[in-house]
Length: 285
Image (cartoon, rainbow, N blue to C red; front, side, top):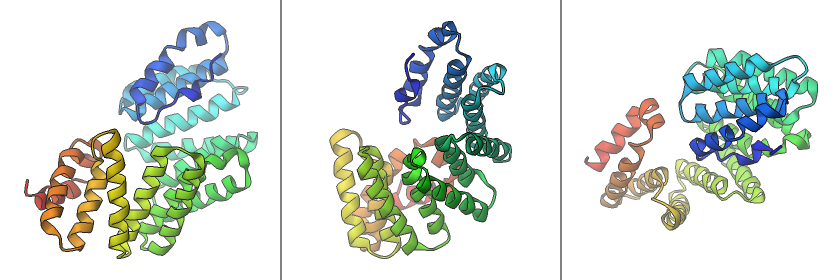
């Protein structure tokens, strides 16, 4: 049967969901509860990424009904995806115990990749910055020692970097983002490289290295213009650089374009309305 994990496109979860659903009949007919249960967990993940939380829980209920103690990987993936749906729907207190179960079962069974996935999610879902950092560092140490989990290194460098930014440790954050960029380049995923460059540039701006930051963001803007509409977050950073360079009229133009794109980002609008309001005001909207 097809390895459905190869079908994942995290940027297009709706398309991924349909690809997974098309495999369901074959999965049922195969008689393999393990394959079917794991497939259901990934359908639920694709639904959660579309904010279809109720439907995702229904899919996970179906997966849960098939679980038994012998389906180790399926159980880990069930815990992970139920936790992710809770966390994405702003219920981290419900998510944390599930991630802990996934971590513990992953360690016990030698499922290193899933174990680090769970630890990295605890580094997102835990209630305090201290706990989040503790789990991120634990995940990083484990991933560095276990080759089967090495794909997580880029994400962990990134997550720890943002925690360092939050704590004001900008030099340490910059070093981590540079490590993440090197890792992403080795992986060869252009989208991940793009994001890693953006992170480096943003921290350079925060460190006062505005010209260098501005140059990187302009390169990123040129990339997006070749393939799609300009990226709203890149436009925002270019505007911030221009404001610091006292080029306010130019900044206003970029802020206007930025607002038109970021106002469509439901997550940002819901979780950071002050940021959207500031962009709108500076853009003169």
